[in-house]
Length: 447
Image 1 (cartoon, one colour):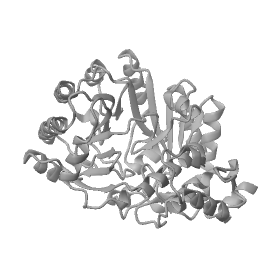
Image 2: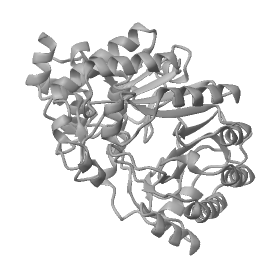
Image 3: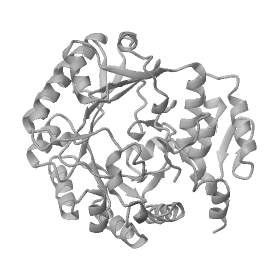
């Protein structure tokens, strides 16, 4: 195809670039951001502010080979009791730094495997959150769920405290692919989880899929998509698998020779994209698909879409507070990440200190570059007039990008837009806009 020839020539199949869930990306965080900085950002929160909370549970029963997240395995519940106790202490500590009248609008449990926690541990954690922050005004409470590690009792606890969206990891239903990535999970198990969620009143379901996996073929992916469509999820994420064994050592188990080459990866994505669009899903950004009624689809249409460390979101609250080991917080002043090592995180909290380990202060230039990159990643266009705070050099950045890709970009001096065939290049263009070095050390393939 002609467009594929253009994409090849422009480097799509060779580039390694960030996913740009933040700008600056997390690999630019430094240890200059400490506990005192974090406290100052918390206490600077104005009265009456709205905030979002992210709770990180790093534990898993099984460690999937494909995963590059900060997780650790446990066969017993012994480490969970201390971790929940530490989280509750951190909740109290953070709450004490904030004005009394903040309102929590979003709550997300991520991991790891949040549903590894027993009903009693979930209840204790949610009681603490409700007692400190109040959960009565939540717009959304979402939880990442492993269908092989959940039951009705845990779903009922979460639903009782307001869970109204669940995110299920699927990746691929093909047994050979599942065995190769260390995540064996039958379709019937997944469907049973969706049914339990519906019985508990949770109808908004996200499903995560991966393309570019070992032994994945066009036929196996088509079959997985067909099965996923039977689950009638309101939102789907179709991520490209990032093979980075130098970052995630468990990935060495995955046979490199069984991975599809970059152009085959692209073909897999295009096929899945066509199937999902044909079933009424709307594409949101580079890798999400949503039913027209879903909040993500509405946010895209209304241009209220944003990027966070969970991917695309319709949450525009300016303060996202991360709790737990390795969690990342976003404030208007900058980003801060908690200590990634669970033992060190617990030691800091138990010593009465916040667990801040690294981060970055946002300069006016960072904010401008980040806003333009977010527009590109959300809408495949970027407008100078849409910047909240105009930055003098921003026009030069867009003009330079237009000069670099004249056949792929339209630019009228204010609005830069990618031609439809060139949209797969958006992460490469965002990397240039962010002056980000494109190396394979920590970044993923552009497609």
